[in-house]
Image (cartoon, rainbow, N blue to C red):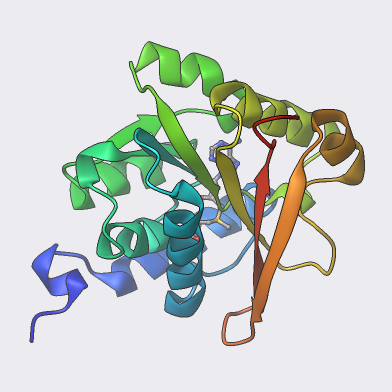
Length: 206
Ligand SMILES: C[S@@+](CC[C@H](N)C(=O)[O-])C[C@H]1O[C@@H](n2cnc3c(N)ncnc32)[C@H](O)[C@@H]1O
């Protein structure tokens, strides 16, 4: 039976090699040595579908890298034309464009998210899925990214973010300032390193 990779002309080894190459160049921006494993990517996609609750609009993926989470989102039934991939690294953005023809690939900095989405006419937004290495980014950049995400999302819509750490990936001061409610998924032990998927929302009535 053909795999998702063979049907979409994807070569995982080429993706892993490129990922490692980019990590050697910018370790803090990459946040991991190798792409997310299949089980973590599937858990991100499952949490996204659950969080959508049928809400119409685009799913925006931040830090799409070599597309491991992208593949899982597509396999979980997110329509490719409703998927927008934001990636700052030009080589990775070019890789995504070559391998995913239907989703919109936006090369740019997630810290400028509302502006990037407006420039590309990407609206409305139903959910944001992030693999950004929030733990290894400076506080002011994390503040800019998370505030931008919740400026772009309507109330009640979710940010899905994984972390390797024991605490929520969105810092407490930001959670309190934005009145975010976070829910923690189970730890995916069979990922290198093991990771947890969190879902954050600003409740509709907050
Ligand atoms: C941990 S990797 C995740 C890649 C992929 N989603 C995965 O799970 O395998 C983080 C990705 O975020 C990208 N990135 C880091 N900072 C970014 C920013 N400010 N804006 C957009 N992308 C960024 C990196 O280039 C890298 O591709």
